[in-house]
Length: 114
Image (tube, rainbow, N blue to C red; front, side, top):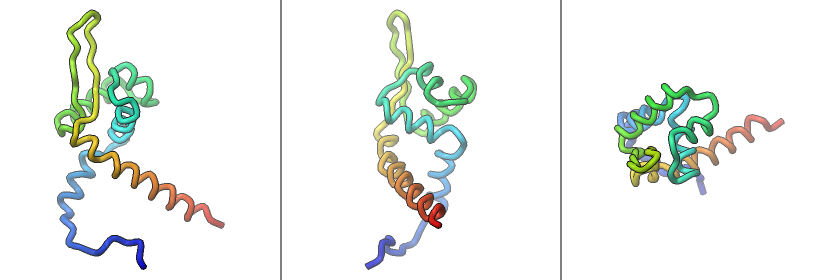
């Protein structure tokens, strides 16, 4: 029995669209950090995503909000603050991220075999 998924017609444009949303050095790291924390403030994200600048974090967050992967919630209290969380659409990628983690681990193990 094969471990491979049955071959089927693949819409390469849809795959490319999904990869474009996730592409870049930071977006996946940001999404994983939000996923781990459920809801997180900008400053905490900036601390947790090692090496990212405020400008780049802002740009990536705006793109992810635009794609409806994350939501930005503003709290008008004292002091005012903003929190980011995954949307239902954003949460739908979590199993895929987990599968990528497993696949990456498998590939790494195969490459490192002697």
